[in-house]
Length: 566
Image (cartoon, rainbow, N blue to C red; front, top):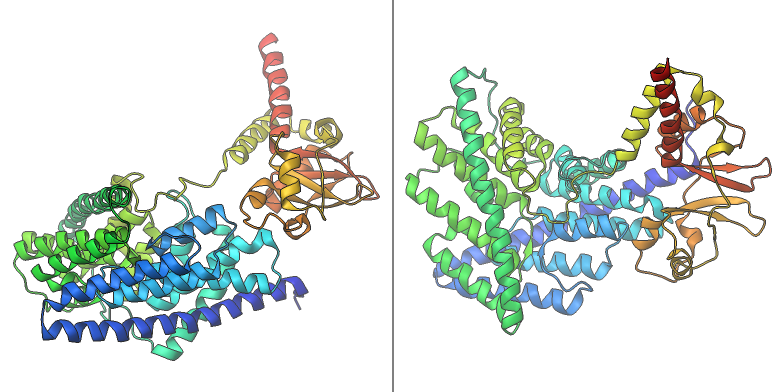
């Protein structure tokens, strides 16, 4: 029987608790949003001019709530806040930001603002995970994983699509990479949140359609490629509009009274809604209408609706409203597909609609796997091949363009690749060299150390004159306790916290170990630093990947120079 350590069991239980709490919280968010949206639809049915008043109230109240209650006084897409917390604050979001911005999103979307529920759901799940993980005393180095797991749980619940939630949370931090380290945590919390949400709200899929299996003909594949190219141009227009309206908003905030901006934004959205009221809210009704074959509009009307939806979404999230960009991207993708279908008389229509939604989502958020998973989970597995083609083409054609400026290009792995390359070349020429070189010949002696009872502020003051990223933590007898990364320290807002709470578990070897073993340990333990200790556990030195690379390059130079002489 496999034994699970108490620490691992505690982590699993914490993730289950995060899933349960997130499932309940997202259910409350969802029900509140649906109730408020029903009220808005009733008011608009009385008179279309209520639209302007209702949207102005929604955007303005959203702005006021964030301004008065949040610590970070910034409205907009909830995914931006999630990325900021994950990439720069160790997965920490203050509870005031979590709840105030979720409430602001309910008012924004419930009263007609054009946005989606995934941003606030992601923020709500991540914020709750941040609170719960700290209450359960999860080690600070692992908090980022638990935060991203909570974010995945939020998306999984609101979309009733756990695979989509998992992949979106893991893909969104990077434009060309995925945060695979948090996969297990994301699976546990997402599946739990999904089950809780379904128990409360029922299992109905986001878009209750099912496409029968089809065999794609060469003509249909050609059409999907053409649709993907067309969708890429629409996605570029969407992202550029979002960026440019963001710049206009910042300019107006500097020139006008900031309190006027949300009123202006609500007024503009209301005017656009007088042209076509379908731009309001998340846009679920538009997608359901298109996918149920009840959407019968001439091309010029669809083009107008497409442009209006893009403008309304960009104004909503740049002029004081809060929400997400995921569902608006799907709406834009569905409308783009409708234009294409009518232009080329393409059939079966549902396949092209699914491909168009995946293409726009993949291009605007740089999440191709998420785009495929969402459409497959909501429209059926027959869409997988068309959506893969569409998502990949639009992802490539749009380059690094994305809604999310905080997205990193990829995880930093250059040193690992360099070490692999030089190691393979060395063992091809002389496999005994890595065994001959001992750790004591490579290590950095007398490294800069810190104590576990020192505060973050004290450590920052101590290390400010050094360029190292990793600092060992030792006790009074210089015995190694663990280590801290500079990024862990810099990601904290509480500078009075003790370093002991940030400690990561070190990988240690004796000084007479060879570097072949060290390289193997670095790969197995996924670390770039190994600590050298004596038999009593006292710290003797550190070996970093770059230290090994330098030594191996020197050995490679000797070998190649010797070969040239011969």
